[in-house]
Length: 176
Image (tube, rainbow, N blue to C red):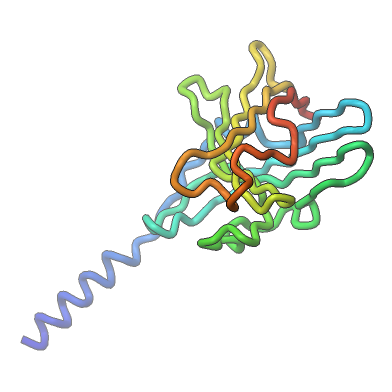
């Protein structure tokens, strides 16, 4: 009986210790880099990287787009996560999304892969999460339409801030 229990335990231990191969996603490459919108003294800039993210709920790894942003309004810095530029997104996992250092997390979305969807766009001023859609313009790999949206669901941010944005909702960014 003892040998059977040891065998079963050893089987499950061996089964759970198989290494996972991360499947590269080359479609993310077209979004990697520095993107900027400038209008007079207002500037919105995001830097996007590909990183391997550990999905805790499924215990799997996946390549995602990770990013940081900087917003300047009337020549004054309003918010920036650039001091954490390049930080490993796996260090930021927080159930409450209170202290995200990488303020963007996303993936390609559409079947033609000209669109990236960021399920996390953390507004540092409002301490609130938004959804961001970044869509490459037709026949372009260096310009993208930025659409910032209020997320759907039961909890969409601190009370009184629903529908409030601290940065532009619609822009056209240029890749540098």
